[in-house]
Length: 326
Image (tube, rainbow, N blue to C red; front, side):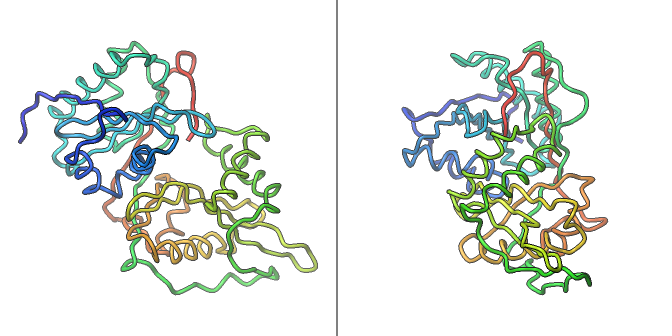
């Protein structure tokens, strides 16, 4: 096992990212999809400017920039197998990381409003951050999720027939500008399922416009007998890195649930994405019934009894931090 004296290195535009760090991230490209798109844009001289922090055992990314709807959480990306993340290793690494964050020029403690990583890493960071930053955790996790991957070899291309109904299902398609009003409502309602990261009507409309303008949103329309077509399901893909794309939003309003619309649209999006990317990743809540949908499409580790990688987002006292959005 490597020595437990963890050192922290900070990389930015002035230093560049060393080859060893890129190698570690790309060797864990599916996990690292949370941070690789930002890193790739930064060093392609785009407007994003995250600060990349690495240790010998863990790579973590602290995106210091503010995204379109708010600042991002602290993402910590392990680059070793989960079984190698021993309590001793996690303690030494989190002590070093927390110390580095607190000594970062211009970083206020209130900036760390939440942390997202594999369960044991999140728990280790939260214990250390509570102690050194003197900001308590919120006991109820913001998000407890399963990390899942779909590839060309696991994709289930066979479309299950829709359940019998009088509804007409139209072809999946990319969203267009004329969809903004409907999409904005669905973005708002989707965010309402994940407090405290909710959206006002204005912010939801802003998000809808961005997703559509960037060609990051697919829709499936349905139509009641003698009715007008309505958007019944949306799927967003907002993180794309070398070889990996992430499905980041899937939502069907209650009116249209039970028609297998989400399964149809997710499958369609995966088929399109797998023409260019090797892996499609997503996170799904451990208690979310959508696990069945993704399992039918070909995402792995979601069926009953399957082994899966658990991720956890923990937040900190909302009276002492500045909430962001992701």
